[in-house]
Length: 223
Image (tube, rainbow, N blue to C red):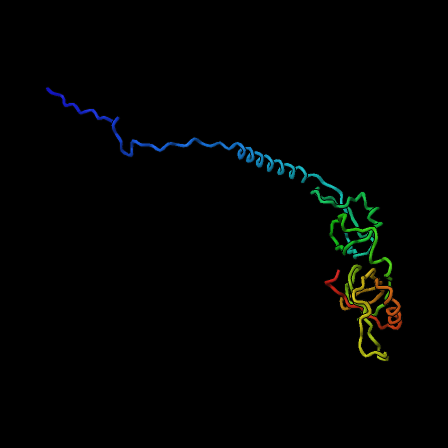
């Protein structure tokens, strides 16, 4: 009985595409990029941890409760103490409230504002040389309702029936309301207000105010 034998296959002599392999380049290691990635990950984790830790810290700050006009001095009635998270912003501490009472508002500050150092100045330009405080006793219809300290108004001469001038004219283009007193209603205001004007126009304003020929118009966009 004969056993069929398969011829041996000679693989040593193959020269086709299957026998040729492209050389694989060695991997290039970049330790600098890997180190940078690790640093970024660690830095982000550290920043997150600091934010979480600092969010629990509370500091005592000053919150404004009444509108304080530019150039006006801060008063105790316009401030209250609040506890806020320490976010790194330079809020004025409640312990410094006595120092704040000796300063003036650099800009008009609205109620609810947390006080910062740059909101106050040691000297007021509005109350400095060349300025005068003028008190006006106005009747209904001569001032708008809802005026507050810090608002800006035009002071206008409104001639009476027997006046020499037929038309009204502006005496002060942008006077600062320093204080407001008297009763005010929704349809109009009546009472005493004090405005800060240039010294050269104060005598004229007082002259017309003494005969009831002065009115004020609010400038809502001016602060």
